[in-house]
Amino acid sequence: MTKKQNPAEERRAAVSTDWRHERGPFDFIGDVHGCVDELIALLEKLGYTVRLEGKGDDRRAITTAPNGRRAVFVGDLIDRGPASPDALRIAMDMVENGHALMILGNHDDKFLRWLKGNTVKIGAGLERTISQLEGEGDAIKTRAQAFLATLPSHAWLDGGAVAVAHAGIRESMLGRNFPRARDFGLYGETSGRVDANGVPERFNWAADYRGPVPVIFGHTPVQEPEWQNNTLCIDTGCVYGNTLTALRWPEREIVSVPAKESHAVLKRGFGLPPPRPVFDPATAKIVPVPDTPDEVEPQQPDSRPKVG
Image 1: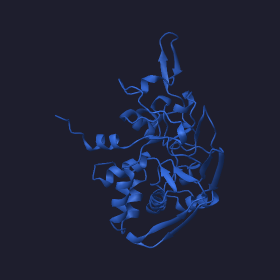
Image 2 (image 1 turned 45 degrees about the vertical axis):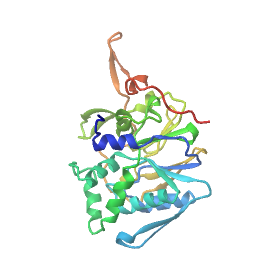
Image 3 (image 1 turned 30 degrees about the horizontal axis):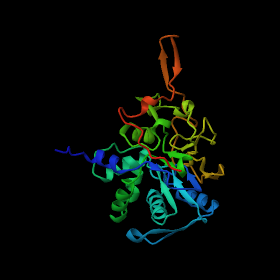
Image 4 (image 1 turned 120 degrees about the horizontal axis):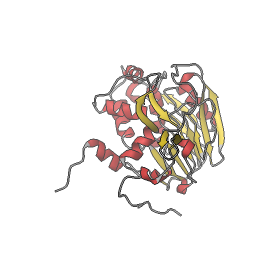
Protein backbone atom coordinates (compact mmCIF):
# COMPACT_ATOMS: atom_id res chain seq x y z
CA MET A 1 0.00 0.00 0.00
CA THR A 2 1.42 3.39 -1.00
CA LYS A 3 1.81 5.89 1.80
CA LYS A 4 -0.10 9.06 1.07
CA GLN A 5 2.05 12.21 1.11
CA ASN A 6 0.95 15.31 2.96
CA PRO A 7 0.52 18.44 0.80
CA ALA A 8 3.95 19.87 1.70
CA GLU A 9 5.66 16.61 0.74
CA GLU A 10 3.72 16.44 -2.53
CA ARG A 11 4.79 19.97 -3.45
CA ARG A 12 8.43 19.28 -2.64
CA ALA A 13 8.34 16.11 -4.73
CA ALA A 14 6.77 17.89 -7.69
CA VAL A 15 9.17 20.86 -7.89
CA SER A 16 12.40 20.30 -9.80
CA THR A 17 15.58 22.17 -8.90
CA ASP A 18 17.64 20.84 -11.81
CA TRP A 19 17.16 23.49 -14.46
CA ARG A 20 20.42 22.92 -16.31
CA HIS A 21 18.40 22.74 -19.52
CA GLU A 22 17.49 26.43 -19.01
CA ARG A 23 20.22 28.28 -20.89
CA GLY A 24 21.36 31.88 -20.52
CA PRO A 25 22.05 34.65 -20.91
CA PHE A 26 20.26 35.74 -17.73
CA ASP A 27 19.66 38.86 -15.69
CA PHE A 28 19.42 37.91 -12.01
CA ILE A 29 17.19 40.31 -10.06
CA GLY A 30 17.59 40.87 -6.31
CA ASP A 31 14.85 40.97 -3.66
CA VAL A 32 12.07 43.30 -4.85
CA HIS A 33 9.82 43.39 -1.76
CA GLY A 34 7.03 45.25 -3.53
CA CYS A 35 9.22 48.08 -4.89
CA VAL A 36 7.62 48.10 -8.33
CA ASP A 37 8.81 51.50 -9.56
CA GLU A 38 12.41 50.47 -8.99
CA LEU A 39 11.78 47.04 -10.53
CA ILE A 40 10.44 48.61 -13.71
CA ALA A 41 13.34 51.09 -13.80
CA LEU A 42 15.88 48.27 -13.36
CA LEU A 43 14.29 46.08 -16.01
CA GLU A 44 14.24 48.99 -18.44
CA LYS A 45 17.90 49.71 -17.70
CA LEU A 46 18.59 46.08 -18.61
CA GLY A 47 16.73 46.44 -21.91
CA TYR A 48 13.28 45.06 -21.01
CA THR A 49 10.03 46.98 -21.28
CA VAL A 50 7.22 46.76 -18.72
CA ARG A 51 3.80 48.35 -18.87
CA LEU A 52 1.00 47.70 -16.36
CA GLU A 53 -2.50 47.91 -17.83
CA GLY A 54 -6.04 47.45 -16.54
CA LYS A 55 -7.59 47.22 -13.11
CA GLY A 56 -8.68 44.47 -10.75
CA ASP A 57 -8.86 41.02 -12.28
CA ASP A 58 -8.00 42.44 -15.71
CA ARG A 59 -4.73 44.05 -14.63
CA ARG A 60 -1.69 42.64 -16.45
CA ALA A 61 1.95 43.42 -17.13
CA ILE A 62 2.83 43.81 -20.81
CA THR A 63 6.53 43.02 -21.20
CA THR A 64 9.23 42.56 -23.80
CA ALA A 65 12.74 41.17 -23.31
CA PRO A 66 16.09 41.80 -24.99
CA ASN A 67 16.82 39.22 -27.67
CA GLY A 68 17.68 35.90 -26.05
CA ARG A 69 17.81 37.15 -22.45
CA ARG A 70 15.63 36.29 -19.47
CA ALA A 71 15.30 37.76 -16.02
CA VAL A 72 15.69 35.45 -13.01
CA PHE A 73 14.05 36.66 -9.80
CA VAL A 74 15.85 35.42 -6.67
CA GLY A 75 12.64 35.57 -4.63
CA ASP A 76 10.91 37.79 -2.06
CA LEU A 77 8.84 39.70 -4.56
CA ILE A 78 6.45 40.80 -1.84
CA ASP A 79 6.04 42.29 1.65
CA ARG A 80 7.16 45.57 3.21
CA GLY A 81 7.06 47.60 -0.02
CA PRO A 82 4.25 49.67 -1.56
CA ALA A 83 3.01 47.47 -4.45
CA SER A 84 3.33 43.74 -3.87
CA PRO A 85 0.35 42.78 -6.08
CA ASP A 86 1.93 44.50 -9.09
CA ALA A 87 5.31 42.90 -8.33
CA LEU A 88 3.56 39.54 -8.50
CA ARG A 89 1.83 40.48 -11.76
CA ILE A 90 5.11 41.51 -13.40
CA ALA A 91 6.88 38.30 -12.42
CA MET A 92 3.97 36.02 -13.29
CA ASP A 93 3.41 37.61 -16.68
CA MET A 94 7.11 37.63 -17.51
CA VAL A 95 7.41 33.94 -16.64
CA GLU A 96 4.25 33.10 -18.57
CA ASN A 97 5.60 34.90 -21.65
CA GLY A 98 9.02 33.25 -21.47
CA HIS A 99 10.78 36.43 -20.36
CA ALA A 100 11.73 35.29 -16.85
CA LEU A 101 12.29 32.50 -14.35
CA MET A 102 11.74 32.77 -10.61
CA ILE A 103 12.99 31.26 -7.36
CA LEU A 104 10.78 31.08 -4.27
CA GLY A 105 11.77 33.32 -1.36
CA ASN A 106 10.86 32.82 2.29
CA HIS A 107 8.39 35.72 2.14
CA ASP A 108 6.79 34.26 -0.99
CA ASP A 109 6.59 30.86 0.73
CA LYS A 110 4.87 32.30 3.81
CA PHE A 111 2.43 34.17 1.57
CA LEU A 112 1.73 30.92 -0.28
CA ARG A 113 0.94 29.17 2.99
CA TRP A 114 -1.42 32.03 3.90
CA LEU A 115 -3.15 31.78 0.52
CA LYS A 116 -3.67 28.06 1.13
CA GLY A 117 -5.42 28.79 4.42
CA ASN A 118 -2.61 27.64 6.70
CA THR A 119 -2.01 29.35 10.02
CA VAL A 120 0.93 31.75 9.74
CA LYS A 121 2.18 34.62 11.86
CA ILE A 122 1.08 37.85 10.22
CA GLY A 123 4.12 40.11 10.40
CA ALA A 124 7.45 40.98 8.75
CA GLY A 125 5.58 42.84 6.00
CA LEU A 126 2.97 40.19 5.18
CA GLU A 127 0.33 42.37 6.81
CA ARG A 128 1.06 45.05 4.21
CA THR A 129 0.74 42.62 1.31
CA ILE A 130 -2.60 41.38 2.67
CA SER A 131 -3.79 44.96 3.05
CA GLN A 132 -2.78 45.76 -0.54
CA LEU A 133 -4.83 42.79 -1.76
CA GLU A 134 -7.99 44.15 -0.18
CA GLY A 135 -10.26 45.34 -2.94
CA GLU A 136 -8.46 43.19 -5.50
CA GLY A 137 -10.44 40.38 -7.06
CA ASP A 138 -9.83 36.74 -6.23
CA ALA A 139 -8.09 36.12 -9.55
CA ILE A 140 -4.67 37.35 -8.44
CA LYS A 141 -4.78 35.25 -5.27
CA THR A 142 -5.76 32.12 -7.19
CA ARG A 143 -3.14 32.78 -9.84
CA ALA A 144 -0.41 33.59 -7.30
CA GLN A 145 -1.11 30.42 -5.33
CA ALA A 146 -0.81 28.23 -8.42
CA PHE A 147 2.30 30.10 -9.59
CA LEU A 148 4.23 30.11 -6.32
CA ALA A 149 3.53 26.41 -5.74
CA THR A 150 5.59 25.57 -8.84
CA LEU A 151 8.77 27.33 -7.69
CA PRO A 152 11.88 25.84 -6.07
CA SER A 153 14.02 27.65 -3.49
CA HIS A 154 17.11 27.12 -5.64
CA ALA A 155 17.89 26.04 -9.20
CA TRP A 156 20.92 24.82 -11.13
CA LEU A 157 21.04 26.62 -14.48
CA ASP A 158 22.80 27.03 -17.79
CA GLY A 159 24.17 23.53 -18.27
CA GLY A 160 25.51 23.55 -14.71
CA ALA A 161 27.47 26.80 -15.17
CA VAL A 162 25.61 28.78 -12.49
CA ALA A 163 23.13 28.31 -9.66
CA VAL A 164 20.61 30.63 -8.07
CA ALA A 165 19.05 30.41 -4.64
CA HIS A 166 16.98 32.67 -2.50
CA ALA A 167 19.10 32.52 0.66
CA GLY A 168 21.88 30.09 -0.26
CA ILE A 169 22.74 26.52 -1.21
CA ARG A 170 25.57 24.10 -0.51
CA GLU A 171 27.44 22.47 -3.38
CA SER A 172 26.23 19.03 -2.28
CA MET A 173 22.60 20.18 -2.59
CA LEU A 174 22.73 21.52 -6.15
CA GLY A 175 19.96 20.14 -8.35
CA ARG A 176 18.50 18.11 -5.48
CA ASN A 177 15.11 18.40 -3.85
CA PHE A 178 14.77 17.22 -0.27
CA PRO A 179 13.56 19.04 2.85
CA ARG A 180 16.98 20.23 4.09
CA ALA A 181 17.93 21.55 0.65
CA ARG A 182 14.59 23.31 0.27
CA ASP A 183 14.85 24.94 3.69
CA PHE A 184 18.48 25.95 3.10
CA GLY A 185 17.41 27.59 -0.15
CA LEU A 186 14.69 29.54 1.64
CA TYR A 187 16.51 30.53 4.84
CA GLY A 188 20.22 29.82 4.40
CA GLU A 189 22.29 28.79 7.41
CA THR A 190 20.36 29.45 10.64
CA SER A 191 20.56 28.45 14.30
CA GLY A 192 16.85 28.25 15.07
CA ARG A 193 17.32 31.06 17.60
CA VAL A 194 16.57 34.78 17.47
CA ASP A 195 19.30 37.37 17.92
CA ALA A 196 19.41 40.47 20.11
CA ASN A 197 17.26 42.32 17.57
CA GLY A 198 14.52 39.70 17.81
CA VAL A 199 15.12 38.36 14.28
CA PRO A 200 16.23 34.84 13.30
CA GLU A 201 19.95 34.28 13.80
CA ARG A 202 21.74 33.74 10.48
CA PHE A 203 25.21 32.53 9.58
CA ASN A 204 27.25 33.22 6.47
CA TRP A 205 27.15 29.92 4.57
CA ALA A 206 29.07 31.59 1.70
CA ALA A 207 32.16 31.99 3.88
CA ASP A 208 32.66 28.23 3.73
CA TYR A 209 31.48 27.59 0.16
CA ARG A 210 34.17 25.98 -2.01
CA GLY A 211 32.12 24.82 -4.99
CA PRO A 212 33.15 25.47 -8.61
CA VAL A 213 29.59 26.53 -9.55
CA PRO A 214 28.89 30.24 -8.91
CA VAL A 215 25.84 30.79 -6.68
CA ILE A 216 23.76 33.96 -6.99
CA PHE A 217 21.48 34.66 -4.02
CA GLY A 218 19.59 37.28 -2.03
CA HIS A 219 17.76 37.28 1.32
CA THR A 220 20.39 39.13 3.39
CA PRO A 221 20.68 42.83 2.48
CA VAL A 222 24.15 44.14 1.66
CA GLN A 223 25.04 47.69 0.65
CA GLU A 224 27.10 46.58 -2.34
CA PRO A 225 27.39 43.15 -4.00
CA GLU A 226 30.81 41.56 -3.50
CA TRP A 227 31.94 38.14 -4.71
CA GLN A 228 32.85 35.79 -1.88
CA ASN A 229 34.08 32.24 -2.58
CA ASN A 230 32.27 32.11 -5.93
CA THR A 231 29.02 33.41 -4.47
CA LEU A 232 27.30 36.78 -4.87
CA CYS A 233 24.50 38.30 -2.81
CA ILE A 234 22.43 40.71 -4.88
CA ASP A 235 19.89 41.75 -2.23
CA THR A 236 20.94 45.37 -1.82
CA GLY A 237 18.01 46.43 0.34
CA CYS A 238 15.85 48.43 -2.02
CA VAL A 239 12.91 48.34 0.40
CA TYR A 240 15.24 49.80 3.06
CA GLY A 241 16.15 52.77 0.86
CA ASN A 242 19.36 51.52 -0.76
CA THR A 243 19.28 50.05 -4.30
CA LEU A 244 17.73 47.31 -6.42
CA THR A 245 20.42 45.24 -8.11
CA ALA A 246 20.78 42.84 -11.01
CA LEU A 247 23.64 40.66 -12.21
CA ARG A 248 24.01 40.15 -15.94
CA TRP A 249 25.14 36.60 -16.70
CA PRO A 250 27.51 35.46 -18.15
CA GLU A 251 28.96 38.97 -18.34
CA ARG A 252 29.09 39.24 -14.49
CA GLU A 253 28.11 42.89 -14.83
CA ILE A 254 26.32 44.45 -11.87
CA VAL A 255 23.49 46.89 -12.69
CA SER A 256 21.60 48.85 -10.02
CA VAL A 257 19.00 51.58 -9.62
CA PRO A 258 18.52 53.70 -6.47
CA ALA A 259 15.50 53.28 -4.23
CA LYS A 260 12.95 56.08 -4.43
CA GLU A 261 12.38 55.91 -0.67
CA SER A 262 12.66 53.64 2.36
CA HIS A 263 9.62 51.56 3.35
CA ALA A 264 10.99 49.61 6.31
CA VAL A 265 13.67 49.66 9.01
CA LEU A 266 16.50 47.14 8.72
CA LYS A 267 16.98 45.81 12.24
CA ARG A 268 20.20 43.85 11.78
CA GLY A 269 22.05 46.34 9.55
CA PHE A 270 23.54 45.79 6.10
CA GLY A 271 26.07 43.04 5.51
CA LEU A 272 26.45 39.28 5.52
CA PRO A 273 26.36 37.55 8.93
CA PRO A 274 29.34 35.76 10.52
CA PRO A 275 30.11 32.11 9.68
CA ARG A 276 28.44 29.44 11.81
CA PRO A 277 30.75 28.58 14.74
CA VAL A 278 31.39 25.05 15.96
CA PHE A 279 33.50 23.83 18.86
CA ASP A 280 36.58 21.78 18.00
CA PRO A 281 37.43 19.63 21.07
CA ALA A 282 40.92 18.92 19.72
CA THR A 283 41.91 22.59 19.88
CA ALA A 284 39.29 23.84 22.36
CA LYS A 285 38.49 26.60 19.86
CA ILE A 286 35.45 27.79 17.98
CA VAL A 287 35.94 27.18 14.26
CA PRO A 288 33.64 27.75 11.24
CA VAL A 289 31.81 24.72 9.93
CA PRO A 290 33.07 23.43 6.54
CA ASP A 291 30.93 22.69 3.48
CA THR A 292 30.70 18.92 3.87
CA PRO A 293 28.77 16.15 2.13
CA ASP A 294 26.72 15.50 5.27
CA GLU A 295 24.25 18.11 4.02
CA VAL A 296 23.07 15.52 1.50
CA GLU A 297 19.95 13.64 2.54
CA PRO A 298 21.01 10.27 3.99
CA GLN A 299 21.18 7.30 1.63
CA GLN A 300 20.41 9.38 -1.45
CA PRO A 301 22.74 8.46 -4.33
CA ASP A 302 23.81 11.13 -6.77
CA SER A 303 21.27 10.47 -9.50
CA ARG A 304 21.59 13.90 -11.11
CA PRO A 305 21.88 13.41 -14.87
CA LYS A 306 24.91 14.74 -16.68
CA VAL A 307 24.29 17.67 -18.99
CA GLY A 308 26.64 18.22 -21.88
